[in-house]
Length: 396
Ligand SMILES: [Zn+2]
Image 1: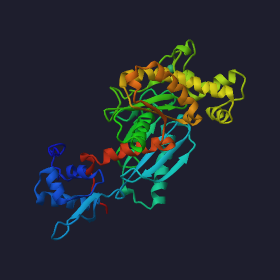
Image 2: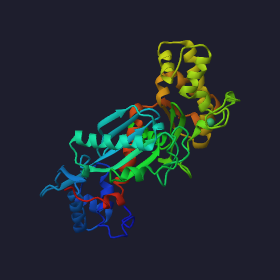
Image 3: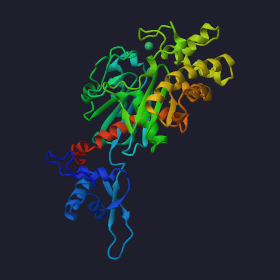
Image 4: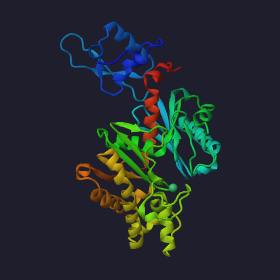
């Protein structure tokens, strides 16, 4: 039974609560909706009409008739509106448009440094958004929310990045407020690893309740889904494992000001630096991956050791959270099984047997799309919530 008192105390028609039942995409008849909600048939008919006017649901063929006229079924009309999903990385940005089921309809890529500041990066995002809507032939009115992932900690309640180490100029910048001056829809902002965890789960592990997504790239961080819910913690920084100290790192300075951090030892740039100091011609993380792919033994050993270092920190995380899946993504995951082999080597030998009995440590399946899919989910979740649906008006 659905709690119909939830969220509708301010004069909502109640259509949004009914809609929450239909969001799963499964077609239902008016009679089934009446049975599920306990509402009168006349009430159901009125609410279905409201949702049809918003085009959020549409009739989908007919239910098997038990005699008499067949009864129409209704389901989510995923193409009715769209959301935008932005993945703003350290040096590269992606903006995608998706339908209400999270299917990507189009995307734009740009090489842009997050360090060029919020107005430059968000300015690109706004003009790319307009371009994308035009290319898809969708009026601006079809856009109902924007989800944005950024490579740093975000205060969840305000959508403002807080002391993000690789995002100069972004500290406490009002991202939603700035974007809404140009695109007047709700803007949801979160840390990139959190949205990657959402995207990975939706894409590959929809029934998994306890999952950690670990991003290994310029930085190292984790998104934690526990009990089926993304865990942001009190300030939005839960899962920020990059600055946990690891034994092998003693004395190595980290850009955060501390020494011996995981990120100073096992991130892409850290591996590149170690190989450079060993005399190899390596400038960037990309060079490391190239060497690994060409079978360079020093590069493979360095990547595997980085995996062990990450495994050391993840062993503690496994004890705390007891996930059943750890998915490893980010640019360094492209180094293939060597990184993951290092993680497994440590986590499987150092954790309690019960914790690893059914623990899969795998490469991200959503890969490059994890962040965009997660940002889309963040936007859809907000836009299709009871309050979000109540705020919608029929299309012109
Ligand atoms: Zn650090």
